[in-house]
Length: 371
Ligand code: GLY
Image (cartoon, rainbow, N blue to C red):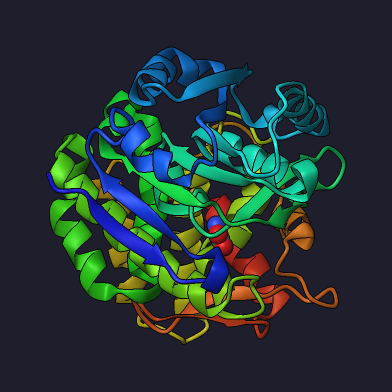
C-alpha cells in the first residue's frame, strides 16, 4: 500500500496527515525531519504502550525517546494528568524547539496536545493516533482539551495544531470490534454531513472494511481526513462551518452525560445514535425526506452498530432532562442551542432554528420505543 498524504493548509500552522501501513516502523524517516535534536518525548497510555510503544521506539532508531504511560480511559483527560504530563515534560528538560509525540487514541491526543500547547507557551507535537476515531477525527484539526469534573467534557483546552499526523492503518488491527465500530460512527458522519457518494461507498464497502480490509480502511480514513482538512482550513476556530463536524454530537453529548461517560456508551457509538436522531429530526421538521433517516439507520444497523436509544443499556433520564443536558454543548450561543440538521444525505447545515418542543417530542418517542 502506498502512503497517502493529506495536507492541512493553515498557513504557518500547515501540516501533513500521512496515511498508510508501517508508518510507526518508519517513525525516524517520518518524524526525523521535524527534529532540532535527536530527542523526543512520547506521551501514551498503558494499554497503547503495551501494544505499540516498543514498535515506536524501535521505529525511531537512533532518536532518543523518553516516555510516560498514563492510565487508559476518559478519566485521564483531567487537571491532575495534565499537571503530571507537563511536570514530566519539564523534568525531562523538553525544550521549546523539541517535539512531543502523542501515541494513543482521542484521550491521549487531546491531553497531549493541550500539554504541548501550554508547555513553555507551546511546543510542537506529532499525533500518532491508534484508534479509528482518533485517525479520522480527533488527531486532525488542532482541538485539544481536558474535561471539567463539574461542567463536562472538553471545556478546558486550546486550538493547537500538530506538526504532523501519522495514521498507521496497521494499528487498527489491534482494536476490538466494538472500538473499531465506534470510530466508524465518525467515518459515517463525514458521508452524512457532506458527501453522499462517500456514504454510498460506505454502504457498499463498510462490512469488508470492518472485517479488516486494510486498503478499504486506508481509503475511508483518507476521505474522512480530506473532508476534515477542507472544513478546518475554512474555519479553524469554529466560527461557522466547523460545527458541521459535530453532526450528531449535540445528542451524543447529552447521552454520554446521561450514561456517566461510561462503557455503556462509547463516544463514537453516541455519534452514530446522534446522527440517526439528527436525520429523524430533520425529516420531522420537513427538511429532508422520510427515506433519509431510514437509510441512515439501515446502514448503521447493517454494520452492527448502536442506532437507537433502545440499544443503550440501562436507564436513561426523561426527554426534558436529556435536552437540559445539551445546555453545556459548546455550540450554545447566548443560551441558544445550535443543531446540525440535514436537507438530505451529504447536505448538513448549522441552525439555531430548532424548536425545543420538537427535540423533546423526538426524544420522548425514542425513549418510548425502549419500553
Ligand atoms: N471533532 C470535531 C472537530 O474537530 O471540530
